[in-house]
Length: 205
Image 1 (tube, rainbow, N blue to C red):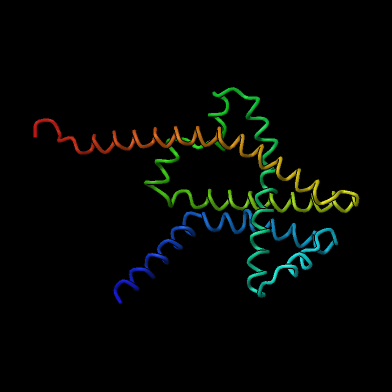
Image 2: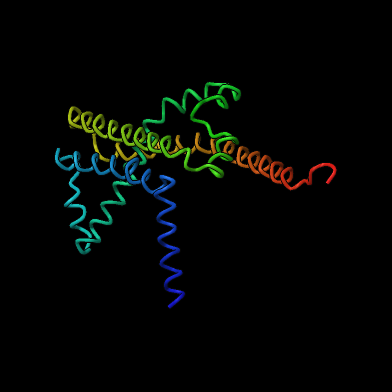
């Protein structure tokens, strides 16, 4: 009985942390919602016969809903990746010093601050999620308009374009991951220095 209570508190604690840190909210509003908008607009315009695609699968209603949500999540990632292209190209053309000064870049100070004072970043994370959702929905509207005015655009070309965008995002993302990893290590070193300094007994004690 105690194990079940601990399991429930563990799952509820995990969900609370995801919501508090905007991880779950970012995925829902930043990626899933724009993807749903794009797929629904594509279906209503007749470009995406999603009901026919789902009918091919021998699945229950809720299983089809789950598949649709997965499709929307993937589509949302593509939409946001497209919105990142101008900024990613600009970073590729900049020097390393200018990239480090970019406000969107992670820093050791921010990493340490998030670990010690997570509540201070709530408003920033809320606005970041809102901006992410706006960018994704804007790309959904623009791509739907392009498909409406370009009836000869085939689905395979859309898939090729989406794959190319994601590959470019992976290429630029690897560089960002490398910088983020270095910043995390720097933040760990700073925290260790602070902790070791706080444990040092005062002089004359």
